[in-house]
Image (cartoon, rainbow over all chains, first blue to last red):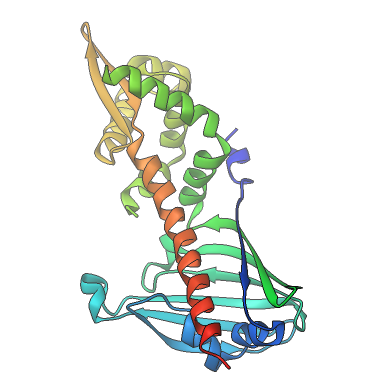
Length: 166
Length: 102
């Protein structure tokens, strides 16, 4: 039973259409000087950005929390990955780990990222699939598996708790 | 994300207790019996789970009944949601970047 918990995965999928040529979208995703301009959310800066665009090449990006993030200021969130597929202006895949610097043991997320580009008239469609394979240590993974693998039981738990509350 | 949640779940016996409590609430004596552990040991693990906010307890007649609490599991959910939100923001930001590119 407990072993089953470790096999669970979570997938995030996104699809966006941009009014830009496919070449521009590809460059934005693969050229470090462009990538660093949009990768970090507001209030963060990109301190490191390396893209070695070939199968087996490295993608390494570090986000750092800026002054406006208050108590998080200076917190660094690295991502380190390896390209497993590079199909120019069509598809990218990289296996990566993301974590909070200094808390690697408990915050690391292992994820596989599939980026697919396609043309739709004068738009470029970006499809992104992120498969999260593991979170943190074994304990975290178990908790994670519980959340998604046993949704039904948790629904039962919710029902139980709402009955308790009455 | 609260590391104590994971530290508490990281011990195999405690994870078994959580598994058991998913079925229904249990008194400490029943937990000890089902898992074939001594009652003081079960009490010790339950204390850690209570301190981490994973398990709650209520008195029913003279028995103390242990049950799972939803909050820590919701926290785990929130934590992964934040990863999803980060990507939403990032993809918006890509759009803004592309608009500014000739």
